Image (tube, rainbow, N blue to C red):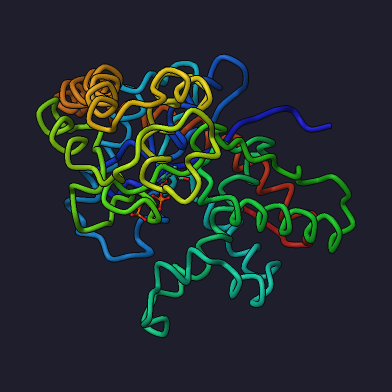
Length: 336
Ligand code: AQP
């Protein structure tokens, strides 16, 4: 039996948004009272796409600030950045040798991110899921809170763990991780297109609510959010083929910890302009305090750096020990 341990990561690519919050960070906060949790700013993942070095450095601190502002306790959880713990990269190399090229070719995120010009994408972008598996398994984590978009990568992590355990005859060495995906809203969609994921890299800022948006901007974005002309239905079936309506209702449900059924009961027969003003109120109530706190924390960079330094030391201790064991299983000698 493996000790229960939570691991998850967020890329420091700027503009953390409502999707990151409802899909992942809100869950991180809930889990901190139940499990030992390791939360990582995955800066090495961020460089699979070109980053401006100055911006990257500042985005790393902004991500720590977002964690703390959302309610993560730096004393209770290990909060650190991936580049500070070299065992992540070392295990990723091992997993590059365990995972099969065919597995990589099936990853839909690579196809989406590489786009039409696949030949020109970085090799890092292609083997990104192996580094993600290493992030998780170097801590022998058992539970991983993520948005639904990461489900396929977690299935790959499970496959890698099984293959390693099998290839090296060490049954049960790596745990087979359990994804923890939010029920009411597993994927927050763009405010401009209900079929596309809300994303930091989407060009239009109107497509997302950033954690640092102020009340006026939130009101304006929600007012302009795409919907349809139908009224709010009384049953879930009435949301069928209505991706934008489903998205707004689900955001409201998730922000208020309600089921979709309950939200429909409350708003059935109403039009979206009435609903949108209630939704705006909820977003402002939950997100504005986080944004204000991020701005406050960013004024004390030495505090944020200290959190990372302390967290990195703790993470490194666990990771180094496990890497030694793993190298020994494989038959590698490690003298330093
Ligand atoms: N729209 C979303 N709905 C639900 N969950 C989401 N997550 C991201 N977008 C949504 C979850 O947030 C965590 C951190 O994600 P990430 O920033 O490391 O990477 P990402 O998934 O690639 O996020 P973006 O916004 O789409 O970034 P870009 O545009 O840079 O690619 C993960 O748990 C993710 O599931």
